[in-house]
Length: 161
Image: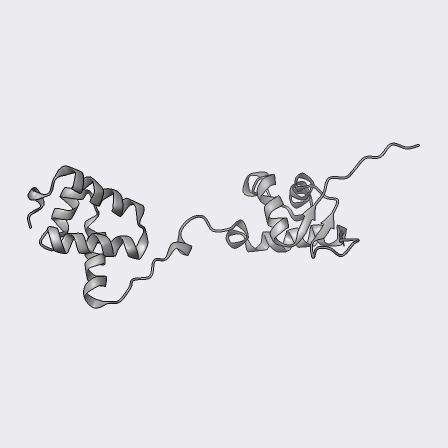
C-alpha cells in the first residue's frame, strides 16, 4: 500500500497515536507504520509524519533484532547542588548539626533546628568563607537541609507575661 492512498483522517490518527505513546512503545509503533506503509524508509516517515529519522531507525532496529534499547532518562536534567558542590553538604552539616534536636515525640526521623535557610546561608558566608554569588538561593539550601534530614523551623516568638 502506498502512503498517497491513505486518507488524511487516517494519517492524523496515525500521527496522534504516536504522540500519545512514549519510549519503546512509541518507537515500535512508528517502526511498524514505517515498515507497512512507507517501504521501510525513515526519510518518508520524517516527511509524511514529522518523526525523527533516528527514532524511526532505532525503532526498526529494535523490531528486527528483538533487543530493546534502554533510555537514559536519569542522566537528563540538572544535577543536585550537593553533587555539583560536594563540600557544601559537609559545611551545612557542620553548621546545622550542633544546633539541631530530635523530634520530642519521636514521630519522625527528622532533626529539628531553629535556624532558618537564610541564617544557614549567612553562616556559610560568615563562617565557611563562601561568596554570596557562588551559593545557591535560600530555597535550595532549605531543600538540601531537608534532604540531609534537617527540618528548619522558624523561631516562635512568645510574649513575656
